[in-house]
Image (cartoon, rainbow, N blue to C red):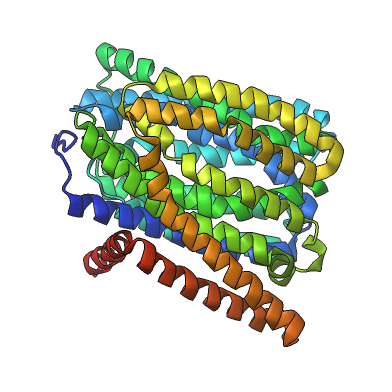
Length: 492
């Protein structure tokens, strides 16, 4: 079997891979956003709230169960068929077990939330998640080759078909089931296409040695993932239990506005960076340089995007979703503020793993999980905006700890980290000032409607931000444009 896991990638290969990952994230952002916008016109907030409760089961099966094995396959210098077979059947057994557990607990959980329709939705979402879990071994094989074009195109194709199916089901009165159908079709199409592209098929060549190192690595990663899983899903579950499906529907949409640019785009880049940085773990100066450049490039997207969301949300969200989604505005603004901070930390876990210190990330995740759950409980008394506020507040209080651990693990100077962010921060401040003035003048001075006001604000903000980056950090801007050119050239 040909294995490219021990070959150091060139800068061009890394840029090409990162370009495809970023492009894929933006494409998902656009396609999923279009589908969601249409569904907000067809569904009630309660439908989104009910399905949001099922996301915990989806994450457990589609991410928590397989991710440790996926990362273990990427980190391993060399693989053989027995390693791949052992990983596949381990994932199948674990994810399948969680699927059966979800089905067994579906009715009791529905009774606990006092939502009888939730039981069937839980089972449906669990089966949809299992479809994605079965694709993690071929995904790891593609990641080792730095082939992110294939999963990007597979995901995009699935989003198109899944979006059409979801809209059709919603139009026929399917309600919350349209959202389950959306996830199921995306996962089914993506898994089929990825398996066909890889060309590998699992056998029964199980290895006791492979079981040992796979489960050992997977366990350490899974403990961290479970803690993140608790933190990420605790707010949804508590809101659904205490405030009801309608409030959860509003909160879910508000969170999505923040999560799309941060979790999707930065998360997509992190998928590429892990196998790249893993090849440079013995070259600390090069590792630090690649990490800082990645932080600068990712925040160059997330900072202005989230800042613009904060400024335009009172106009943008009712214009996009309709007036009945007005309760989303304040919560989305608060979460976007927290997302700016989150985006500076989202690549930190790569350093812990590459440097062989995943336990530090696990300890930090444990602290985060406890603090965030307490914050969510306190925030419930103030509604969904209160939950968002205390979420952001705890993140700010814990930030110095996460920052210090990163600097110590990477042996990184705090001034080097701050220098990487300074041009982006400066550009975002200038852009925000221009956006506030443009929005105010368009609506209050010139009396324009929402659509032209948003267009003028977006053009003004983009122009000011681009000029700012050209002045403050021309090298980084040229590298970003070069990555786009490389992506475009190789896509033809």
